[in-house]
Length: 115
Length: 111
Image (cartoon, rainbow over all chains, first blue to last red; front, side, top):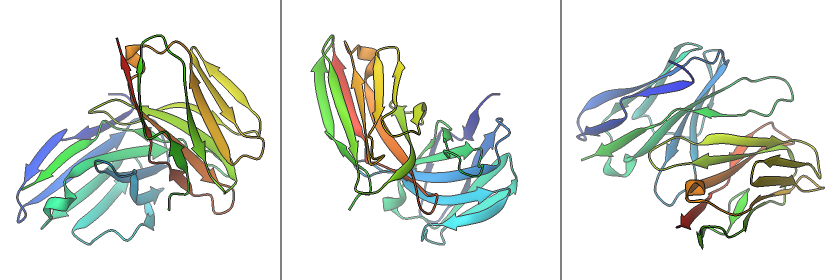
């Protein structure tokens, strides 16, 4: 595998289900991100992990719970979601350096539908 | 209010035409990136510009960073159907080292 991979690619879940999204990066980067992309809305940054430590949480509801066991893997645990949470969830990685450009390498995304 | 305003929001053109999309802000950025996203996929980095006034070319795509590092443009010459997609600009804010994305320009190139 190369780049950033995400599984599953598609997920349909009920509002009472619990599911997890998985992301893996094969680029040796030190930072990983979760983004939400909804129709007709800009890309929304949800969480940032730098060397496995969460450095940013952009007021994301607690029904979304991230986990970063190491610098190559990132999970997003989902529970009791709402229909408005239906969106494309994108994972990205980057190599953070002082004065760097934060260039993002994205995975293909998980298309989530909450019924 | 978006920190990075992209225009137009949507552009539909015929194959062979030229086009320019814009990314504007009142804030200064230490660097700016352009991405292209095709349906069902994640955004793919096209280019990063870091110096005010910088121009970079990627085949038929020309990217320019404004002199004051507050704006950028992407010009496509002789558009092809394969250029269809969502074009996103993203900038690293000069103060705070925060990366922000614009809302994107949806480009449709018809054959």
